Length: 197
Image 1 (tube, rainbow, N blue to C red):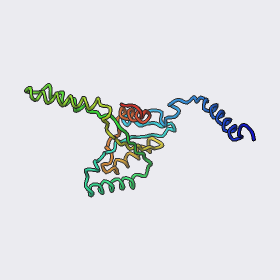
Image 2: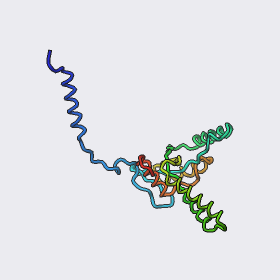
Image 3: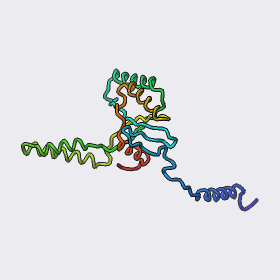
């Protein structure tokens, strides 16, 4: 009987080979991995993919299903089923958490502070501003948002797809695509999922 078992020797050799393989360096950048290369500068702000296809992103209108009765739930299911029947292109639904943007509400309450007629109104408006600031600064408070991503090979195909989408959406999506800034934020969020903002 040998001092070392043949299996143990073989396992040690395999571990050494695995360690050598792990030390290999990869010369890839993020741009090599991402499936898109730019966002167009026109009014549609289409995303151009690495294969020169085009992507458009829409925000999905969400509904509080836990507050809806069964008839409303069935109606929403039927609207989504009809949407799937009418749209023949591939699409993807993305869901992600975003920080709450309450800048318009803060502007409103700032105007209310400035136009307050008495101390009581001013105090109430300042309290509302403090609550909005706390909500915005708290990293644990986030808003779940859902997006519909459609793609086409050419701009002409995208135009036809968008016409079909506008006719068949049944209130499932917002009628306007996302702004360029929101698309950039969504792309950033998808590729940096551990960020707090």
